[in-house]
Image (cartoon, rainbow, N blue to C red; front, side, top):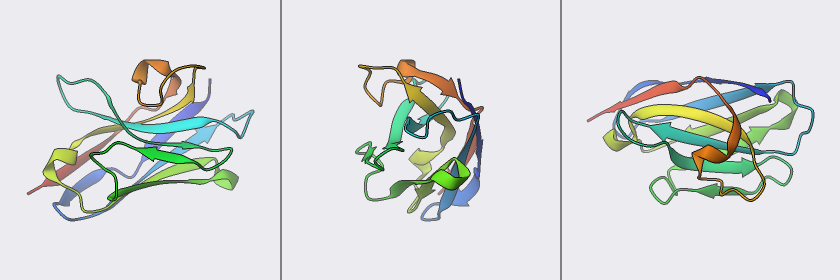
Length: 125
């Protein structure tokens, strides 16, 4: 398993921006599936965005498309989530996940072997 550490969460007003970071340690293979999830109390984790670090291909949940951008810095073993035009409904704990098991959908939280501790994002109206 790889260790993941998220940072960059905070409180912003609606319409504002935040950039989350997911730093990984002990990578043995630079090609991996990394995803951002979010969760609010009483709800399941929702897949927000994903990137395959080998090719840079990305995918997004419909709810964040055109507002969020996932990117990578391979030299730093870091994946970012740039969040623009934030809405109150984006308020959640955001988690980074890596190493999707073969055959699993990227948005299925149960498919990942490694998780970070989470970072809180709060958007006020």
